[in-house]
Length: 309
Ligand code: GLU
Image (tube, rainbow, N blue to C red; front, top):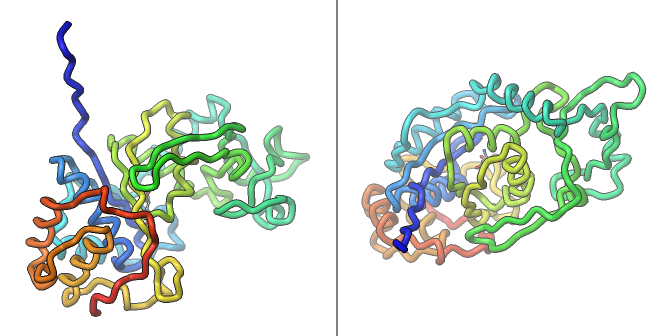
């Protein structure tokens, strides 16, 4: 019998920033990790702007992020995908899930849920199943939720190892379309990754808690799960996840970009030579392509290093 050679698919990775501000150190780490892990094997690296939630979008910041990525010499493949242009597709997928009786309308307000949910999960109150059997009385149907099973969802993260979560007990049926009509991040991210044939997801560990919900959605849509790498979180000096509140300290500029890229390589557990910190970013990226090793990445969250602003 002929030995069958196991052919692995070419990697299709992506970077999916939300345009809620300029590129900061945390997003640079995600961009760098996802870029090197895709490009090192000759794969593709796609770019998607997650502008799904208009009130959170800051005008001009998508272009700002694209300019910063350009500044580092990150080259993305194909056209940039904007979630704000994908509503038709999300609607179609929701209709499909609805036909398969996987969704139900819910009339609960957030305030009611906080009052009635006995426990709170990592991402807010655990949905107690109030509208599972139908909306009570003539209350207004507000959001669409995905019915989740009472079973452990298991997946393997290539940095964090084997993980599992019981969605019903720890999250509850979750929202795919919000009361205000906006599509939920969980839906959009999975549909976009499927439609773009993404098979490798590299992103910050703050999204680790979303992964079991997304893994269950892949199952509902009968699609194979991508490979996951969740990268350590970069914390501000108050030990909180980086956000606008941390101001300019973690923002990438034309002037600090070399030190920032060097610091991002080191943040990811790599050991870039000291003199590389002064080198051009193209040289730093080339070093990363040659030397980046995912086994050196740890799961420990770390403070943002000083890289000069
Ligand atoms: N848009 C998300 C963020 O900026 C990332 C989503 C993802 O990578 O799945 O944090």
